[in-house]
Image (cartoon, rainbow, N blue to C red; front, side, top):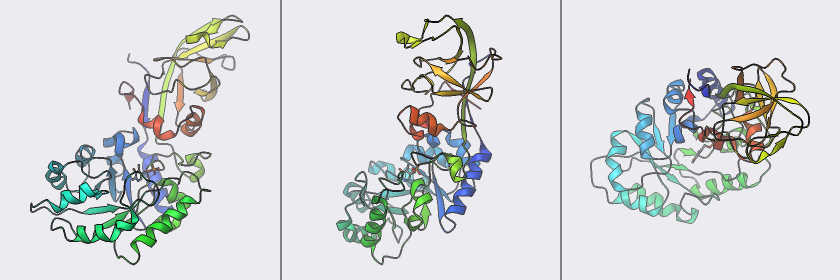
Length: 355
Ligand SMILES: *Cc1c(COP(=O)(O)O)cnc(C)c1O
Protein backbone atom coordinates (compact mmCIF):
# COMPACT_ATOMS: atom_id res chain seq x y z
CA UNK A 1 0.00 0.00 0.00
CA UNK A 2 1.26 3.48 -0.78
CA UNK A 3 1.47 6.37 1.63
CA UNK A 4 -2.07 7.58 2.37
CA UNK A 5 -1.24 11.27 1.97
CA UNK A 6 -3.23 12.58 -0.96
CA UNK A 7 -4.74 15.63 -2.55
CA UNK A 8 -8.03 15.38 -4.37
CA UNK A 9 -9.42 18.04 -6.69
CA UNK A 10 -13.14 18.40 -7.28
CA UNK A 11 -14.04 19.14 -10.90
CA UNK A 12 -17.58 19.99 -9.89
CA UNK A 13 -16.35 22.51 -7.29
CA UNK A 14 -14.15 24.20 -9.92
CA UNK A 15 -17.07 24.36 -12.35
CA UNK A 16 -19.39 25.62 -9.63
CA UNK A 17 -16.91 28.36 -8.68
CA UNK A 18 -16.60 29.53 -12.29
CA UNK A 19 -20.37 29.64 -12.55
CA UNK A 20 -20.61 31.55 -9.26
CA UNK A 21 -17.95 33.98 -10.50
CA UNK A 22 -19.94 34.62 -13.66
CA UNK A 23 -23.00 35.44 -11.53
CA UNK A 24 -20.93 37.97 -9.60
CA UNK A 25 -19.45 39.60 -12.73
CA UNK A 26 -22.07 38.85 -15.40
CA UNK A 27 -20.74 41.28 -18.00
CA UNK A 28 -17.08 40.27 -17.90
CA UNK A 29 -15.12 37.53 -19.56
CA UNK A 30 -13.14 35.32 -17.21
CA UNK A 31 -9.47 34.46 -17.63
CA UNK A 32 -8.60 31.90 -15.00
CA UNK A 33 -5.09 32.28 -13.54
CA UNK A 34 -3.45 28.85 -13.71
CA UNK A 35 0.10 29.93 -12.85
CA UNK A 36 2.15 27.74 -10.52
CA UNK A 37 0.48 24.52 -11.68
CA UNK A 38 -2.96 26.04 -11.24
CA UNK A 39 -2.26 27.20 -7.68
CA UNK A 40 -0.99 23.71 -6.90
CA UNK A 41 -4.22 22.07 -8.10
CA UNK A 42 -2.71 20.58 -11.26
CA UNK A 43 -2.81 22.40 -14.59
CA UNK A 44 -4.27 19.59 -16.67
CA UNK A 45 -7.09 18.87 -14.25
CA UNK A 46 -8.04 22.52 -13.84
CA UNK A 47 -7.85 23.56 -17.49
CA UNK A 48 -9.87 20.54 -18.62
CA UNK A 49 -12.44 21.03 -15.86
CA UNK A 50 -12.82 24.70 -16.84
CA UNK A 51 -13.08 24.23 -20.59
CA UNK A 52 -15.86 26.84 -20.65
CA UNK A 53 -13.64 29.61 -19.19
CA UNK A 54 -12.95 32.43 -21.67
CA UNK A 55 -9.20 32.21 -21.26
CA UNK A 56 -6.33 31.37 -18.94
CA UNK A 57 -3.50 33.41 -17.42
CA UNK A 58 -0.02 32.12 -16.61
CA UNK A 59 3.17 33.67 -15.31
CA UNK A 60 5.57 32.79 -18.11
CA UNK A 61 6.02 31.17 -21.51
CA UNK A 62 6.93 27.74 -20.09
CA UNK A 63 3.62 27.62 -18.23
CA UNK A 64 1.80 28.86 -21.33
CA UNK A 65 3.22 26.03 -23.44
CA UNK A 66 2.05 23.43 -20.93
CA UNK A 67 -1.38 25.06 -20.72
CA UNK A 68 -1.67 25.09 -24.51
CA UNK A 69 -1.61 21.30 -24.41
CA UNK A 70 -5.06 21.31 -22.81
CA UNK A 71 -6.99 24.23 -24.33
CA UNK A 72 -7.54 26.29 -27.49
CA UNK A 73 -8.70 29.32 -25.49
CA UNK A 74 -6.65 32.54 -25.19
CA UNK A 75 -3.64 32.27 -22.87
CA UNK A 76 -2.19 35.47 -21.41
CA UNK A 77 1.41 35.54 -20.21
CA UNK A 78 1.22 37.88 -17.20
CA UNK A 79 4.95 38.58 -16.84
CA UNK A 80 5.30 38.86 -20.61
CA UNK A 81 8.42 37.55 -22.30
CA UNK A 82 11.89 37.73 -20.80
CA UNK A 83 13.86 37.52 -24.05
CA UNK A 84 13.21 38.08 -27.74
CA UNK A 85 14.00 34.45 -28.55
CA UNK A 86 10.70 33.54 -26.85
CA UNK A 87 8.66 35.51 -29.39
CA UNK A 88 8.35 32.80 -32.03
CA UNK A 89 7.32 30.14 -29.50
CA UNK A 90 4.80 32.49 -27.93
CA UNK A 91 3.39 33.13 -31.39
CA UNK A 92 3.24 29.47 -32.37
CA UNK A 93 1.40 28.67 -29.15
CA UNK A 94 -0.94 31.58 -29.88
CA UNK A 95 -0.25 33.35 -26.58
CA UNK A 96 -1.10 36.92 -25.68
CA UNK A 97 1.80 38.86 -24.19
CA UNK A 98 1.90 41.52 -21.49
CA UNK A 99 4.20 44.50 -21.97
CA UNK A 100 5.07 46.03 -18.61
CA UNK A 101 8.44 47.71 -19.21
CA UNK A 102 10.65 49.38 -21.78
CA UNK A 103 12.68 46.24 -22.59
CA UNK A 104 9.52 44.43 -23.61
CA UNK A 105 8.36 47.35 -25.75
CA UNK A 106 11.74 47.43 -27.51
CA UNK A 107 11.60 43.67 -28.04
CA UNK A 108 8.43 44.16 -30.10
CA UNK A 109 9.79 47.27 -31.87
CA UNK A 110 12.87 45.36 -32.95
CA UNK A 111 11.01 42.27 -34.07
CA UNK A 112 10.80 42.02 -37.84
CA UNK A 113 9.12 38.69 -38.42
CA UNK A 114 5.67 38.19 -39.94
CA UNK A 115 4.06 37.31 -36.58
CA UNK A 116 1.33 39.43 -35.01
CA UNK A 117 0.82 39.47 -31.27
CA UNK A 118 -2.21 40.18 -29.12
CA UNK A 119 -0.69 42.50 -26.56
CA UNK A 120 -1.66 43.83 -23.14
CA UNK A 121 -0.05 47.00 -21.81
CA UNK A 122 0.21 46.88 -18.03
CA UNK A 123 -0.06 50.11 -16.05
CA UNK A 124 1.29 50.42 -12.52
CA UNK A 125 -1.47 52.17 -10.57
CA UNK A 126 0.05 51.56 -7.13
CA UNK A 127 1.11 47.93 -6.82
CA UNK A 128 4.67 48.92 -7.81
CA UNK A 129 5.58 45.44 -9.03
CA UNK A 130 5.06 45.30 -12.81
CA UNK A 131 3.72 48.00 -15.08
CA UNK A 132 4.59 51.29 -16.69
CA UNK A 133 4.29 54.61 -14.94
CA UNK A 134 0.88 56.20 -15.72
CA UNK A 135 2.58 59.35 -17.02
CA UNK A 136 4.27 57.27 -19.75
CA UNK A 137 0.99 55.78 -20.95
CA UNK A 138 0.56 57.91 -24.09
CA UNK A 139 4.09 57.19 -25.25
CA UNK A 140 3.80 53.42 -24.78
CA UNK A 141 0.37 53.35 -26.37
CA UNK A 142 1.67 55.20 -29.43
CA UNK A 143 4.85 53.19 -29.77
CA UNK A 144 3.00 49.87 -29.44
CA UNK A 145 0.54 50.97 -32.08
CA UNK A 146 3.47 51.79 -34.35
CA UNK A 147 4.79 48.21 -34.05
CA UNK A 148 4.08 46.14 -37.14
CA UNK A 149 3.94 42.96 -35.08
CA UNK A 150 1.29 44.21 -32.62
CA UNK A 151 -2.42 43.58 -33.22
CA UNK A 152 -4.54 46.71 -32.70
CA UNK A 153 -5.88 47.90 -30.47
CA UNK A 154 -3.57 47.05 -27.61
CA UNK A 155 -5.46 45.89 -24.50
CA UNK A 156 -4.90 47.48 -21.07
CA UNK A 157 -4.51 46.05 -17.59
CA UNK A 158 -3.49 46.84 -14.04
CA UNK A 159 -3.25 44.87 -10.79
CA UNK A 160 -4.40 45.69 -7.24
CA UNK A 161 -2.18 45.70 -4.17
CA UNK A 162 -4.84 45.63 -1.43
CA UNK A 163 -7.93 43.97 -2.84
CA UNK A 164 -7.63 41.34 -0.07
CA UNK A 165 -9.06 43.99 2.28
CA UNK A 166 -12.54 45.25 1.34
CA UNK A 167 -12.10 48.25 3.66
CA UNK A 168 -8.86 49.47 2.14
CA UNK A 169 -9.43 52.67 0.14
CA UNK A 170 -6.43 52.00 -2.07
CA UNK A 171 -8.31 49.77 -4.51
CA UNK A 172 -10.74 52.58 -5.37
CA UNK A 173 -7.75 54.91 -5.81
CA UNK A 174 -6.12 52.41 -8.17
CA UNK A 175 -9.35 52.06 -10.18
CA UNK A 176 -9.53 55.86 -10.42
CA UNK A 177 -5.88 56.10 -11.42
CA UNK A 178 -6.38 53.49 -14.15
CA UNK A 179 -9.37 55.21 -15.74
CA UNK A 180 -7.81 58.69 -15.34
CA UNK A 181 -4.72 57.40 -17.14
CA UNK A 182 -6.43 55.78 -20.10
CA UNK A 183 -9.01 58.61 -20.38
CA UNK A 184 -11.28 57.92 -23.35
CA UNK A 185 -9.08 55.26 -24.94
CA UNK A 186 -11.38 52.68 -26.52
CA UNK A 187 -10.06 49.19 -25.92
CA UNK A 188 -10.39 46.02 -23.88
CA UNK A 189 -9.47 46.42 -20.17
CA UNK A 190 -8.76 44.07 -17.27
CA UNK A 191 -8.27 45.09 -13.65
CA UNK A 192 -9.84 42.67 -11.19
CA UNK A 193 -8.33 39.78 -9.26
CA UNK A 194 -10.61 37.77 -6.91
CA UNK A 195 -10.78 40.46 -4.23
CA UNK A 196 -11.88 43.12 -6.70
CA UNK A 197 -14.25 40.70 -8.44
CA UNK A 198 -16.03 40.20 -5.11
CA UNK A 199 -15.87 43.67 -3.62
CA UNK A 200 -15.33 46.25 -6.41
CA UNK A 201 -17.86 45.88 -9.25
CA UNK A 202 -16.41 49.11 -10.72
CA UNK A 203 -13.30 47.11 -11.54
CA UNK A 204 -15.00 44.29 -13.46
CA UNK A 205 -14.45 45.82 -16.93
CA UNK A 206 -14.05 43.49 -19.97
CA UNK A 207 -12.02 40.69 -18.40
CA UNK A 208 -11.66 39.63 -14.78
CA UNK A 209 -8.73 37.50 -13.53
CA UNK A 210 -10.09 35.61 -10.52
CA UNK A 211 -7.61 33.07 -9.19
CA UNK A 212 -8.10 32.07 -5.58
CA UNK A 213 -11.91 32.24 -5.74
CA UNK A 214 -12.02 29.79 -8.66
CA UNK A 215 -10.16 27.37 -6.38
CA UNK A 216 -12.87 27.98 -3.77
CA UNK A 217 -11.01 30.06 -1.18
CA UNK A 218 -11.68 33.63 -0.08
CA UNK A 219 -9.16 36.35 -0.91
CA UNK A 220 -10.19 38.16 2.28
CA UNK A 221 -8.39 37.53 5.56
CA UNK A 222 -11.43 36.91 7.72
CA UNK A 223 -13.72 35.07 5.37
CA UNK A 224 -13.95 31.65 3.77
CA UNK A 225 -14.94 30.59 0.26
CA UNK A 226 -18.34 29.15 1.28
CA UNK A 227 -19.29 32.59 2.68
CA UNK A 228 -19.12 33.82 -0.95
CA UNK A 229 -21.01 30.78 -2.24
CA UNK A 230 -17.79 29.05 -3.37
CA UNK A 231 -16.77 25.43 -2.80
CA UNK A 232 -13.25 24.32 -1.91
CA UNK A 233 -11.74 22.53 -4.90
CA UNK A 234 -8.82 20.96 -3.04
CA UNK A 235 -8.98 18.49 -0.17
CA UNK A 236 -5.70 17.40 1.39
CA UNK A 237 -6.03 14.25 3.44
CA UNK A 238 -4.06 11.46 5.03
CA UNK A 239 -4.73 8.81 7.63
CA UNK A 240 -3.91 7.68 11.11
CA UNK A 241 -0.85 5.41 11.05
CA UNK A 242 -0.26 4.89 14.77
CA UNK A 243 -2.04 5.21 18.10
CA UNK A 244 -0.28 5.05 21.42
CA UNK A 245 -1.05 5.68 25.04
CA UNK A 246 1.08 8.28 26.75
CA UNK A 247 1.38 9.00 30.45
CA UNK A 248 0.81 12.34 32.14
CA UNK A 249 4.02 14.35 31.78
CA UNK A 250 5.20 12.57 28.59
CA UNK A 251 6.37 14.97 25.92
CA UNK A 252 5.47 14.61 22.27
CA UNK A 253 7.59 15.12 19.15
CA UNK A 254 10.62 17.23 18.29
CA UNK A 255 11.76 19.67 20.95
CA UNK A 256 9.37 17.86 23.30
CA UNK A 257 7.15 20.79 22.75
CA UNK A 258 3.87 19.35 24.02
CA UNK A 259 3.48 17.93 27.52
CA UNK A 260 0.63 15.48 28.15
CA UNK A 261 -1.55 16.91 30.95
CA UNK A 262 -2.89 13.45 31.79
CA UNK A 263 -2.72 9.85 30.57
CA UNK A 264 -4.00 10.08 27.02
CA UNK A 265 -4.18 8.52 23.56
CA UNK A 266 -2.07 10.10 20.84
CA UNK A 267 -2.57 9.57 17.14
CA UNK A 268 0.09 9.93 14.45
CA UNK A 269 -0.99 11.11 11.00
CA UNK A 270 1.12 10.75 7.84
CA UNK A 271 1.32 14.45 7.00
CA UNK A 272 4.27 16.76 7.55
CA UNK A 273 6.08 19.81 6.30
CA UNK A 274 7.62 17.60 3.61
CA UNK A 275 4.11 17.40 2.14
CA UNK A 276 3.42 21.10 2.50
CA UNK A 277 1.81 21.08 5.97
CA UNK A 278 3.51 24.04 7.64
CA UNK A 279 5.96 23.48 10.48
CA UNK A 280 4.78 26.77 11.95
CA UNK A 281 1.32 25.39 12.86
CA UNK A 282 0.68 25.61 16.60
CA UNK A 283 -0.66 22.91 18.90
CA UNK A 284 -4.45 23.06 18.77
CA UNK A 285 -4.65 23.35 14.97
CA UNK A 286 -7.62 21.15 13.95
CA UNK A 287 -7.37 18.03 11.83
CA UNK A 288 -10.69 16.42 10.85
CA UNK A 289 -10.63 12.84 12.03
CA UNK A 290 -13.72 10.90 10.97
CA UNK A 291 -15.44 14.22 10.56
CA UNK A 292 -14.57 15.64 14.00
CA UNK A 293 -11.78 18.01 14.93
CA UNK A 294 -8.73 16.53 16.65
CA UNK A 295 -6.16 19.07 17.84
CA UNK A 296 -2.57 18.93 16.65
CA UNK A 297 -0.04 18.45 19.47
CA UNK A 298 3.66 19.26 19.33
CA UNK A 299 5.73 20.19 16.32
CA UNK A 300 4.84 19.14 12.80
CA UNK A 301 7.70 16.97 11.54
CA UNK A 302 8.75 16.17 7.97
CA UNK A 303 6.51 13.16 7.37
CA UNK A 304 4.20 13.03 10.38
CA UNK A 305 2.17 15.00 12.88
CA UNK A 306 0.60 14.03 16.20
CA UNK A 307 -2.96 14.68 17.36
CA UNK A 308 -4.75 14.49 20.69
CA UNK A 309 -7.20 11.55 20.62
CA UNK A 310 -8.91 12.21 23.95
CA UNK A 311 -12.16 13.12 22.16
CA UNK A 312 -11.77 10.19 19.71
CA UNK A 313 -11.99 6.95 21.71
CA UNK A 314 -13.20 5.11 18.59
CA UNK A 315 -10.22 6.14 16.44
CA UNK A 316 -8.33 3.31 14.73
CA UNK A 317 -5.38 2.97 12.41
CA UNK A 318 -6.35 3.73 8.83
CA UNK A 319 -8.97 6.34 9.74
CA UNK A 320 -9.10 9.27 7.35
CA UNK A 321 -7.80 12.65 8.45
CA UNK A 322 -8.68 15.75 6.46
CA UNK A 323 -5.93 18.33 6.70
CA UNK A 324 -7.85 21.05 4.83
CA UNK A 325 -10.61 21.22 2.27
CA UNK A 326 -14.01 19.57 2.54
CA UNK A 327 -15.27 20.41 6.05
CA UNK A 328 -12.12 22.22 7.20
CA UNK A 329 -11.47 25.57 5.52
CA UNK A 330 -7.95 26.11 4.20
CA UNK A 331 -8.35 29.75 5.26
CA UNK A 332 -8.46 28.62 8.90
CA UNK A 333 -5.26 26.59 8.58
CA UNK A 334 -3.57 29.44 6.70
CA UNK A 335 -4.40 31.91 9.48
CA UNK A 336 -3.03 29.56 12.13
CA UNK A 337 0.18 29.16 10.10
CA UNK A 338 0.44 32.91 9.64
CA UNK A 339 0.21 32.63 5.89
CA UNK A 340 -2.38 32.76 3.10
CA UNK A 341 -4.28 29.92 1.35
CA UNK A 342 -2.31 30.68 -1.84
CA UNK A 343 0.94 29.61 -0.22
CA UNK A 344 -0.52 26.43 1.26
CA UNK A 345 -1.91 25.43 -2.15
CA UNK A 346 1.35 26.10 -4.00
CA UNK A 347 3.44 24.26 -1.42
CA UNK A 348 1.85 20.83 -1.84
CA UNK A 349 4.89 18.63 -2.39
CA UNK A 350 5.34 16.37 -5.41
CA UNK A 351 5.27 13.20 -3.31
CA UNK A 352 1.65 13.81 -2.29
CA UNK A 353 -0.53 11.47 -4.35
CA UNK A 354 -3.00 13.19 -6.66
CA UNK A 355 -6.42 11.66 -6.91
C1 LIG B 1 -2.19 35.86 -9.66
C2 LIG B 1 -2.79 37.03 -10.34
C3 LIG B 1 -4.17 37.22 -10.34
C4 LIG B 1 -5.13 36.38 -9.51
O1 LIG B 1 -5.16 36.83 -8.18
P1 LIG B 1 -6.16 36.16 -7.11
O2 LIG B 1 -5.94 36.95 -5.88
O3 LIG B 1 -5.75 34.73 -6.98
O4 LIG B 1 -7.53 36.30 -7.67
C5 LIG B 1 -4.67 38.25 -11.11
N1 LIG B 1 -3.85 39.07 -11.81
C6 LIG B 1 -2.52 38.93 -11.80
C7 LIG B 1 -1.67 39.87 -12.57
C8 LIG B 1 -1.94 37.92 -11.06
O5 LIG B 1 -0.61 37.79 -11.03
